[in-house]
Length: 397
Image 1 (spheres, one colour):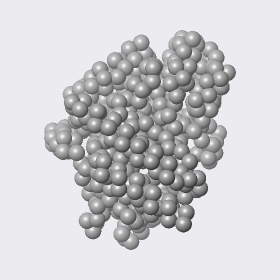
Image 2: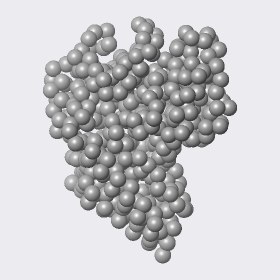
Image 3: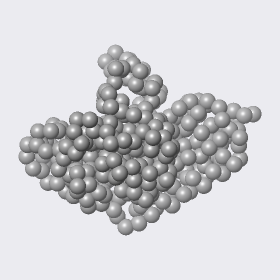
């Protein structure tokens, strides 16, 4: 471990504050260190390993495709990308898909698509994008500008122009900010990195209506919420609206990097040849993994089980909150949850959990986030909640 840390410190840019553990393999809901110790994973690679680690169907798809064809570029056709695009389209907006390598890239594509559509329909002046305070859309320059978190933006100013921010779930603020120069409203149906804050049905409906009225696109960032995390295939299905554009990534590749920007049929051909591209986007291996992921999600009863486990997680967290004043709020949807603590003890809780071989993370000094695999069992939820309760009780004693 010391040699590994030394290598990181010497050769890897210090952009992450890493936890003091090195993992060598994963299986199901567990990660294992070099000594064979098992850690119950309630972070899942930041909602990447939704099917658990090394799911047999995903591993088999990767092995088979890697042995046959790994890369051609997007100058040619490949079957895995075509099949994954079909699965994404037919199970969501019904339009067309652009593949990239990450959530940030998927959101970059959505921003470009929205601005191109705005220019086509309203001229150069129709370029403004409205995003929500507390949101997170990536770390490239455009997606960072869309991420209304000043502490993340400040070191990289000046940022791009043409972005406006409104408070989450504030319909009046959105109405006030909206005008005919807006080309898109960008929304996470549940703000993940921002602390697991769901968008209300009222706000989603208002955004849909305002976009329709002003000829703007409603864009849902489902990089973290998509693909079963909330108990439905996509989180927009919990609302009464359908977006014009949706972005996916994280769990789409079952552990491999892939992003997708999905446009409804009306907007499917806004980006034409030469306007956007990605050398590795939708590569055969990552796309084959995505097909395997989708097939598991669509299996009979799978999402129903996610709903049941999500209800159980919420029940246990609500019981915890009722039992201690150390918790001020429980938030979330499906298997995406957060505890808001009365004091800034989230980092200490995460460290203590790691010592007990439970993997959690905090999104703020007082917010602990829970992102278990979608195959999590009730006993695993019990173990995590009981640990959190014991930690908080000990801190209060």
